[in-house]
Length: 592
Ligand code: BDP
Image (cartoon, rainbow, N blue to C red):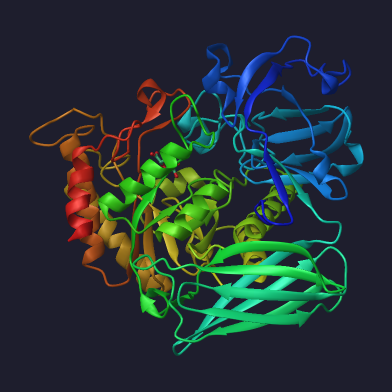
């Protein structure tokens, strides 16, 4: 799914701004005709989470309506017009001039509808989008689950995950035009052969016939080729001599221009920046462009005061500056896909991404039908994620889930030995990972395991990714004991699975300004010691492929008796991006 763009052929109109808004707790709005106008609207910012904009809506996750008007310039006539929503959490329904044009389930991923046939060209148009984020066990991520590990979390609202279940339209809403015959999709994959970069481009168009012109250039080179469409598909390989490869050290981008030509006319055009690079796993290493790379960085969240989970561009720029400052080369989009603007920034700044699906907190204590429904939702979200992010050189690995809970989670928590698991649950991940590899054989695939995750599940992945909190949730205040257990487990995992291992989360809640000598839980000193202990353990083990600290910054959670003020304080930066002691330690260590 192409990111919308303005160019010589296509038009783009950003509908971000102040919209009308009204909650609909009893679901009466549709019958009452709210798709044509809201009877008692209040203003709301799009993008943004409603929970942050109105105090009395902080915990409201039910149905709400967004509405605004727009006019379409006459110059767009003759084109197809699409409405594209970057992300609405969780379910959205869209109406144009009172006609329902579509719906979408699942947050954090874009959806779009062709609205041409419902537009008025000589009049204002009315757009209404209803959104709700009810927490339900059958959704992905699930909510309101109750029992087992979820009871332990005891969060209000009852999410099955440790971040605030922000609701609303979180990313820009665009109108854009495409010609009647247009480029529908472009897929770019790259290989390296000696000093030549092979760029394989597959173009899909809405119609058939005609030809496709490709132009790939950077400051030093310019390559062009033309290929006939075979039906609606065209494919070509461009060989770039002395290719300048994309990497964190040199995030070099080439510009690819795709033109659709019919009857000698340029009917459509699309430009995208691409990077030439390869990713693989060999032995105990992740290879980028054939060379081992160690991932240094964080798990993060899209989270900030007032904007909530809404796209916040100044914050994004600030965060990339801090990632550079501290010497990180990567992060994971824990625990849902981040904005497309983030992915484009990662391409440009040379940050490697583990791109995670919204599948956090999956569980198996439910009927076979419910498990099958959940698997279908996970598959749909992987399809939508790959369709969106497949062309980003920054994305090197897909994460199909964070901390899925095996059926007997509590017994596993207590055990320090890997326990066998019901093969039915393994089949769930076999299917999901197989689909991911089929959709994109060019990247790595993982799932991120909690303590007690069966080795059968890790065996399905390219990199063994684990989250560990020895010294915090267990062995709290007894770091030496925690580290002894950690190193024992790392060695055991590696000898059992024979693959690169990466810790995707480790960290300690740390109240900024709390100090203690000797170090103790919640103090800045303890965070420093714990992170150093884990990093030392990884440095001593050549099979370790990366260390991502939990978390880049403090972030909002539900209310719970382990979350002071409704925050997770494991950030090495505060929520307003001030460095804790640990940030200075990491800066020294990662820049050394
Ligand atoms: C891990 C989760 C993460 C939590 C973290 C924590 O993956 O979402 O925020 O624990 O408890 O289990 O801080």
